[in-house]
Image 1: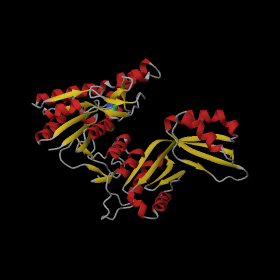
Image 2: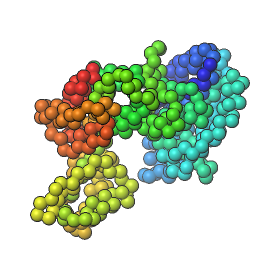
Image 3: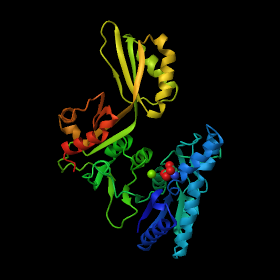
Image 4: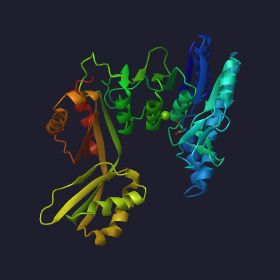
Length: 405
Ligand code: ASP
Ligand code: MG
């Protein structure tokens, strides 16, 4: 008998029928003798609907009140799931985030979890109840309702699993695991039985939408055994996120290809090539809370240089505005950019021991006539920035070049 946390996303609880199916799945696990804590999202589309409603009231909704509104979606699904379980004879009890004292900091709409009180949940489990907890929400240190950022129910589930020292955290979703790339783009994409935690962190941060990145970070920090499974089909072991690299197996150089359209490139042209320029440019961007990702500074000639970097696409206009105001004081000849770019990345722990992975990526893209605008590398990933119209082509040819199908 184990203690297992199940998490069901919006699609999995998207209709009364689907909620009843979730109840059956939970009942089955319970009948096998396991203690079950269930975390649910809002019904699919519900959080978007609530966000839109809030924007009808205020152009920039008040963050505290926005969280009051957003947290209601999950409150509906926990109650409905508890009813569905009772209806098939399984004792269950639902809790909102504040009721289980999932405490967070005060940054509304993107709060971070600080602590969880597991006492009530343990008492219910001891009485044989299934415990159902609303994902995505908590209570701030000031006593206000908070939410954890879009996709945050994954993080709720992992955090509860960590607090309860659960044997496994199972994320049930509309795909049956983690794939070598998005199967909607590359039909040959393959489900992985296991993926290492380090690779999953990279895949999540580079555009794979299967898990919210913070949930993966949490799993790493607290060593939570995490598994991604399908809620729509029966059977299958999904993908287990592992902490050990199995060194008796010859690792492939690359395990997955990720892509991300949420990118824009900014160019600051003809700036004086002298100390402090990068700080002047990027300092101003950081002060506006805009996240900079890839950065390139060319070797200057005749005392000037070109400086380029990427920001999330939603911050493109604001970044151009900020730098245009500073253009004279920086001494830049021109400021421009492009918000029709995307980032394609190859990820794999095996890169550490294989030379030439980057060269192979560049050759593969060159053969398709795809121009690389920027490159960034780490020990286990190579990313390139390219025109977004080549995103799917680049993903397909790289998936093939590294034999991932
Ligand atoms: N309902 C929230 C959202 O749509 C949280 C989640 O589903 O994980 O982002
Ligand atoms: Mg999700």
